[in-house]
Amino acid sequence: MHPSLIIISYLLIIPMTKMCEMKLLGSAGSAFVTRVKFVLQLKSIEYVYIEEDLCNKSELLLTSNPVFQRVPVLFHSNGQPMTESLAIMEYLDELKPDVHPLLPSDPSDRVQCRVLAYTFDTLCYPWMKEFMLTREKERREELKQMLVQGSVMLEEAFVKFSKGKTFFGGDDIGYLDIVVGGFLGWIKFYEVVFNFKVIEEARNPRLAEWEKSMWSHEVARSVIPSHEIHMKFLNMLIGRLPPLPVSASDAA
Ligand SMILES: N[C@@H](CCC(=O)N[C@@H](CS)C(=O)NCC(=O)O)C(=O)O
Ligand SMILES: *[C@@H]1O[C@H](CO)[C@@H](O)[C@H](O)[C@H]1NC(C)=O
Image 1 (cartoon, rainbow, N blue to C red):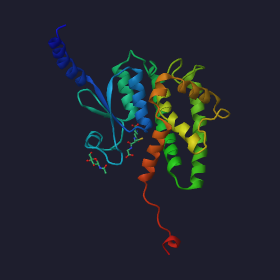
Image 2: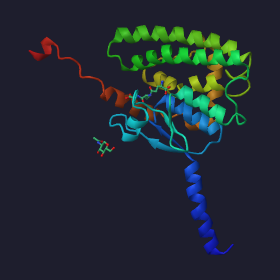
Image 3: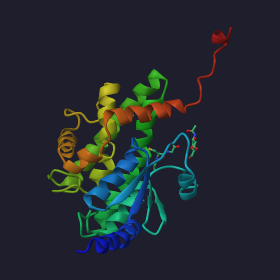
Image 4: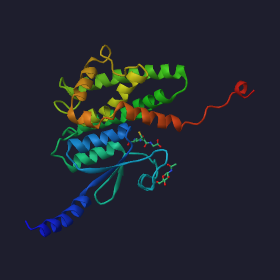
């Protein structure tokens, strides 16, 4: 091809591909963002990643998610913002149903998956977050016990969903593998930093096997953030906590 033709085709192709690209607004340590990255990669969807500073939120975040002001936000190639990791996962599954389908095809099985995801997010996630951020030792012990109960619930769910196979989704990674798997980096972090195993072989034998299978999955390993990133994220959260009240004895 003549050099000038090559240049012209680049000028045409580059803006076109850029136009079709999705953008993901995220924060590197967020398990909810990890979920979305996980699905994008499994489905081989190209996207541009934009890192958000949760201590100094951008106009883009404030205008695209004005109610909750949190990540992830996925922008459709036409600019339309989408929020809530579970809703985004379902959107991507509908957008590319033929590449690595996530939800089972049976409607009642799909409901079961969504209900477990909802339960995990409204029950287990707040415990996990408070566990890290509480300044009270007793409360942390209490939360540990709640998380242990949560892990037993997840173990039962795993047995039910996996039907003797490797993943929640069966032979391959599915919706629930990503919903829970988004948190595997944090689960490992708790083990290192707080010496607490959310998933333990003796208590959760099948889930412990699942955890190993997940860590040996190429896409999981590439999207789950490092220990350093989790540490940075935790420090960011701690930095935003209100200062401890000064007690009378301190002030005296
Ligand atoms: N339910 C939401 C949760 C998202 C969420 O909690 N994101 C956190 C980061 S892990 C966030 O952006 N928080 C905003 C803030 O802390 O100010 C989802 O599934 O996307
Ligand atoms: C906050 O973000 C704005 C732009 O988004 C930047 O100009 C400003 O310097 C940032 N402030 C801090 C304290 O990082």
